[in-house]
Amino acid sequence: MSPRRIHFVSLGCPKNRVDSEVMLGVSDGAGYELTAAPEDADVIVVNTCGFIESAKQESIETILELSDLKQEGRCERLVVAGCLSQRYPDQLASEMPEVDHFLGSSDMLKLGPILQLDRDARGQRMLVGDPADYIFKLSDPRRLSMGSHSAYVKIAEGCSRKCSFCAIPSFRGTQRSRTVADVVGEVERLVAGGTAEINLISQDTIAYGRDLDGRPSLTDLVRALCEVDGLRWLRLFYLYPEAIDDELLSLLAADNPLRAYVDMPFQHASDDMLKRMRRGYRARRQRELVERLRTAVPDVSMRTAFIVGHPGETDDDFAQLLELVRWGRFQHVGVFRYSHEDGTHSGTMDDLVDDGTAAARYEELMATQRTISGEHLQALVGQELDVLVEGESEESELLLQGRHGGQAPEVDGAVHLTNGAAQPGDIRRALITHAGDYDLVGDLSCGAEDPKTAEQARRRLPLA
Image (tube, one colour):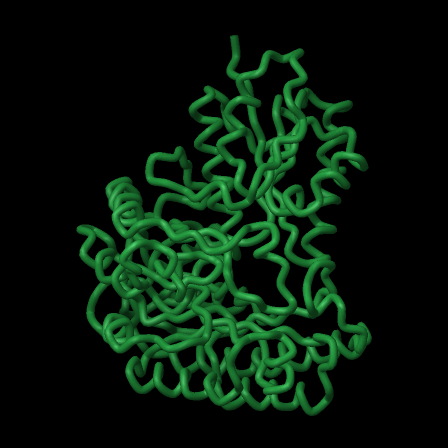
């Protein structure tokens, strides 16, 4: 008898990816075979995002598209999990009769009993529980989905902030941190399995440990992880803009696995907008943080994120945001157009920015950052950098692709590699020979490069 097959679709952020990987581990334990073809699957699982309107719409369209396979393919069960079903369980259950089971944002382990049901058994349909009931533990099953060389490690669930535009606490719960020992144990296991790079994620990473007995800090956790034998790279994501202690700055600057990379979403630059967003700080703190980081860690790479079009945003507010981006010259910037969300304080505001204005501000901010990013990358031409090799280039099967220490997975561009062979997970020295707006070309031989492959790589650089 052939094994039963399962297909996963994971939407949204890296935190969702970890949840999907837990469900992958659950399906492995149930004896299911993973298939990349949804039409070949007996069970299809969609892990949804419910953060903003565009993400919700993508989730709904994906569910409806895959539900057709219950009539056209071999799919017997369609399972919807994650933030969207946590946020709107009754509405989805009423409007999507084709979905067999709903799991919430903390219900990954409940997939196990579903997969054990007999083919003809209906089972319980609504399995959405309390979002505060779960936090990942070392003992939970997990199967990596982006290659063994790099992995996200979730150090906490939920968020206790009160940002006015964000609904996440309502469907993820308040902050719940894992213990230092549990995180270290997971990292040790991943590294023993060949993982070279660990990316620490949570909704509010700087607040790690404040809810635990003894109040261990993020610095305590990072210090312990830097001692894990065999760990090559460690990276921090989602640091709320507040004080970074001196020891963490020292760790960022030292010769250890922690990369000189900081992801710190600022969201805006105008005092009026920061107050409306309930961020709890003023624009001056942002500049002080940037200056302190760059003084202590001169080669730091910074990623930040901004929202344009929030209710009440004026031309002057946006001008202040543009000025901060020009002043800060951040290596990486994400820009999001405001999404008016029910259940948030911002969602009660009526001085909305029209879509056309928000779109124009988005384009202007992105164009400004594109120029800055290109200048940063151009300055790397002629330097030798350590590059984590990820595999074959997305641009050409004749090239390899990787990332240097200032580039995080999935969001920060790549280094396309010429002149050499390497395996995923290798960290190799490369001479940077060309730069685009977001990507680089590097020569693995660190010597004379082959003109043909170098020119091919240069011409394939994504420029937008």
